Image (cartoon, rainbow, N blue to C red):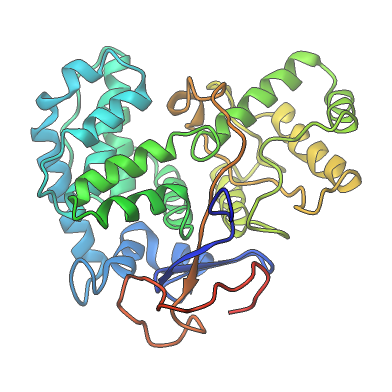
Length: 364
């Protein structure tokens, strides 16, 4: 008997498949790179939701749905923002999701997030929330609601790349929590609140906060190489390097690295943001030294930098001292044998009675 779900095949899905051995993520038959270049955030949502939240969905359909959803979310700010503005951002966002009506549609739930985050950010600065522009795409409108004015196209493109890149990563702990909740016939809104609660854990969405703490500690030491040597020699871990699924490379990190280079073409190596500081030589040097050091002390998981979350400092405050023993991450088996197979629209199908669970290394 296993004391957890690590490696257990708990579902079958047509939505995505993460191939850790080859460093590839498929989302409805498309690679992450293809989604970023050809579809963008709203176009990728159309692919994911097609057959579940509508048929024949297009990018334009999703832009319109999310625009209307942001307008509705803004009209409901009074239901939760006065109390949430006094709480840490991660708690405030949970309150925003908990305030959603039981019958909330998928687009309404998704559109609540950018409106809520922008309102919380502005409230912390003593500024009133800015109404959304439903004609804009999510990245452009979110940055406008935060900044108070239209922003440069390169910033919008970078954020759209980020949102598209991290849109789906298979049956992670938070998505599994949502599946368990929805199986009780609870509402979609309730499932999302539960999933968000799981995501805030230090071993899941809160993990980047630990990496940012590490960067602060390295910067304070004044000796990057010395800190890395001492930590690795004593059996310590480099937070943000290596991945439990991707053994060779995380393709999302590649996409985000390219987005950072386009954001600041004059910078040779994208730096890391921590605590609101601008990316600079210290962060870049740490990443380079970490990769080099990991090559000497490789533990089988690789030492390639993971994707970085520049907003992690604010959203993951308070999570850094709650790390437990380990993360339960079940697996989902792809319903199609190849990404270009005709999709089987049975979102998550329970395994047939008597079906054997494949071992971790089994090929699809």
